[in-house]
Length: 291
Image 1 (cartoon, rainbow, N blue to C red):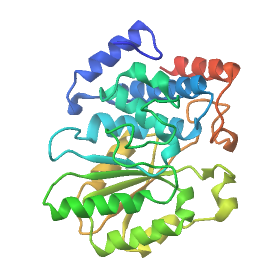
Image 2: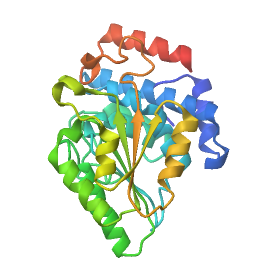
Image 3: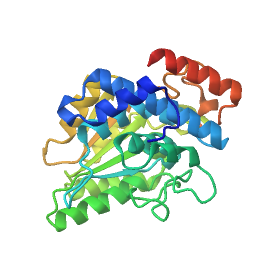
């Protein structure tokens, strides 16, 4: 197997984790996986000279947990994962590669002409993704329709959705929130990247969305705010989400854009700017020390 980044020790560790059942994957394993997701994301975006590094770095812990502790990826009753904030897809592609859904070496083709790994996911190119995304605000409606369809088919597959705080400025998000609550869609499990940063700067300055927890609650949702960089908090949040309490549930994960790379953390400039060689080398050096 070829890898986009990493030394032999990392490769052996990854192979060891891949052979474990989900219940045997430890927090130390998850920290290793999240760090590797971050390294992959930096390398992918650097090689493409295009993409969004901040979001994938901030979401790496959540996606490591989701792919190695939660998602059922095969069979008629498999889980579905959609992402509404498609620009953060480097985190998903990397997590897919670590889980064995795609070759990790394919990550080197990210955003290249003809690649399956487009800069915004597309079902036209990659059958393993559930929705094409790029225009923000559509994901919750997509996921709600899919969840309703599965329920009508009596299929117990669960629908997970990654979304962003900035897209809660979109009216379609709230139409979907109202529809999901009306239909009592308890088989939908959205989680929101709550880092207060979008491409034009701080969300609160572009167009404030707070109090976001109370707004979803007002539409009939149960809501939990959790630390998106603490594996116990992430585990507790998904465990809570998966318990059927008669109403849809929303997890608001507090995250740090650019997490793990000091000069990228909480800096809106890294929402959608690729690293140059110097930035790439410094970022990889910091991540290597943390691995």
